[in-house]
Image 1 (cartoon, rainbow, N blue to C red):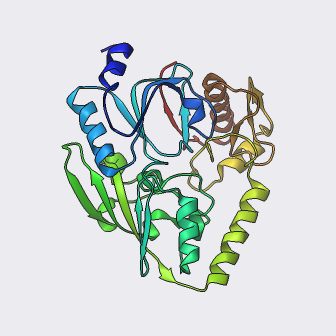
Image 2: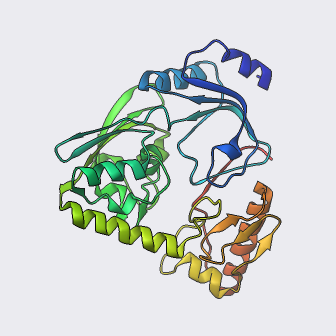
Length: 303
């Protein structure tokens, strides 16, 4: 099925907001990426499920994304459909120490809600620029906290179009991975179980983490967040710095001067600029220290 045929199939559908030939650079924090043939932005769980079922029933390739904060899209864009679970499907409700979140809720927003209700243990996620759905998928974490520490249960759509509910233990959370990735599940909603705390202490912790993040990370430049996973026994940024690669550039992409663990978009970088620079970093670090750096960002799309 070619692009026009795919687009025609969605012209009369009510799955939420539907966009055609939508530049992915406008939907990723890297600000890189060619157009998606079709982008769907659902506003309800029903629209999300129906859009997925429609793609599956019609053998149309689809990709589920959140805020695009750890996504690098190739310059040729994405064939088929991108279903963006974020701005339309992001309700949050609080019941005692339980926070219910739809998959598109931003972690930063959930953190503010937790603070407002004096609920602690979610401070670590306050500065992660992703959605709850994406965070569950990769067991996102920072500053010694991870999603596995706060999740009570997760509702998902499985490959058979069945809605399942899994407990924390059943999610198989581990470093930057979970059952979602293992089985190709789609996160619909999440229940977080937090603890009552003191508003002032929670607020102070968030402020401290925000200061640490802004002072050490290149948040003023487009990037996909931390580019590499932490290799066992090492820190990726320290290895890259010790390899003499601070500030290394290729095309419009560069190793951040502020934190070497970040590859940043300095000047209208292309995906090829970024992937070439990443390969150079991996080779030099492996040659010098015998350590293989694995990327944390997800690369999708066509050249």
